[in-house]
Amino acid sequence: MGAWIINGWAGVSINHRTDLHIVQGNMNAQNYRDNILEPHVLPMANRIGTGFLLMDDNARPHRDSSPHFFRITISSAEVTLRMSVVVLVVVLVVLAVLIRLTRRPHHHDLRARDVHKGHRWCSLGMFSRPCFCNICETLAMGSDGMVCDSCGVCADSHQCEVTADRTLPCKVITTRTATHKHHWVKGNLPVNAECEVCEEECGAEPGLSDWRCCWCHRYAHNACILNVAEVCDFGKLRNCIVPPSCIRLKFSRMKRNLLINEVLEPNIPSWSPVIVVGNRKSGSLEADMVLSSFRSVLNPAQVIDLSERSPEEALEWCHLLPAHARCRVVVAGGDGTIGWVFNSIQKMDLKRAPHVAVLPLGTGNDLSRVLGFGEGHSRDVDVVEYLDQLADAVPASLDRWRVHYDAPRSLAGLRIPAAEVYMNNYLSVGVDALVTLNFTKARQSPFYIFPHRQINKLLYFGFGTKDVLERECSNLEERVELWMDGVPVTLPSIESVVVLNIATWGAGVRPWTLGPGGADAPTQSYSDGLLEVFCLSSSFHIAQLQVGLSEPIRLGQCSTLKLKLKETAPMQVDGEPWEQHPGTITVTYSHQAEVLTLLPQHQ
Image (cartoon, rainbow, N blue to C red; front, side, top):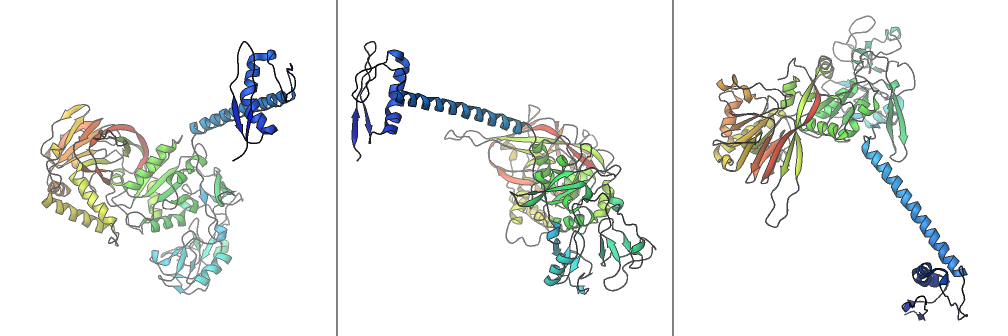
């Protein structure tokens, strides 16, 4: 143990005495200042003032308003005070900056691929046509060949890939030139390609022959290519493309990648660029081929894979584009992917929200059917034809609904945290949600090795048939209570309650207008701020609705809905199912999303 030093002193003023203090350790100048002068002597000296008596080192008592060690102590106090003021000012400045940052929209880094590092290779087996290697000019087999999905350069071996990366430039994302020249790629022209100059058939000869531009998709013979205008106008899809001359990049030293920093306005009338998003790892895994097809006709930076980047990063295009340019976002996927994008748009609070279109790749695709984009596409969809149709689409508004869940207190007095999701299509509790839940579990199984839309429909049918016999959701009316616009509703004998926002449900069924009662049912619209509520009596009742042999048990329309669950029950929102614990579910109007539709009227 260290030595113990006992120091005692007394301050005498108006019959007052100080306490005895014990300080551990060797008594040096710093210990004396930090443990005696600052905490004890200085406060008393400040309270007593000039009448304070001090004895130092056994010297006689004396009066000194500023002895040396008091000057040290006072100087230390002044420094401490000044530092406290500085810290306080810094804290206030930081708080002010944080408040300003939270009030303005948060921007996300939009990454860009460095095309100078090589091509974006994918398996040639994704494409149905045979290709010739652009390096050795031999026929590339589908199992071994590779193709760049941006510019279309082919290679039949790893060595040819390396050579192509070094000698053949890929489709650029940005340039500094005011005008854009054709990017000619030799050979592998589509069937019935026509020369831009002589209007004769191109690419008919065996082997690697003739040329095509990977931007405007014009074709030319070897003998005619010199007669084609040097400047590329991006072809008939120019309104959809962000020209490379309009994109400015910056290099992030911290993240070690290229970022899109600015987008300039091109000299293109009625310019409305298209941003394509999709998740190549979801659903039936068809989005990979679709995204590759879009990269071949657009600027590759306009196509974003949600398995690699977030929807917020894709929507950063809305911040970068010129103020009056209206962005169109094409969602290549199912209803779940569409809801993901809608939620991101709402969270980013964009000043000018994009118009959202759908390229259906899911199983149900109910929203796509309502908007006129079809019941589903395969992986070899003609993206040029789709973009041509998109030019005829008109804006519309889609109601979005807030689904809020509150749980009752448990026996221990604890409450499960409230949850909230958003609904675009429909919500249900009961047998149809059970079928969807069983299908989702099967799709997540390791034995689910053949993802395909038709196989998915067969699985739905199998689980629906299974529940006809088991009837797990029977007597649902005894387990739930329902209020529509605050009015309690008496439920008949049912196995499901369905809440609709759009006209289709269950992969294309239009239940609200089915049967004799459909003619007298109130008009339905996805932008009227109203919900349609109906019930299902069994899983067999669902099968009857699928073929139009029955009609639902209609309860009516409402603008708010409350559903109280007394027991755990299967539930789904827009095809995303789960087991819902007892509690209260409230559905209220949230806002409207901007969409594109090919139909003349809301359906």
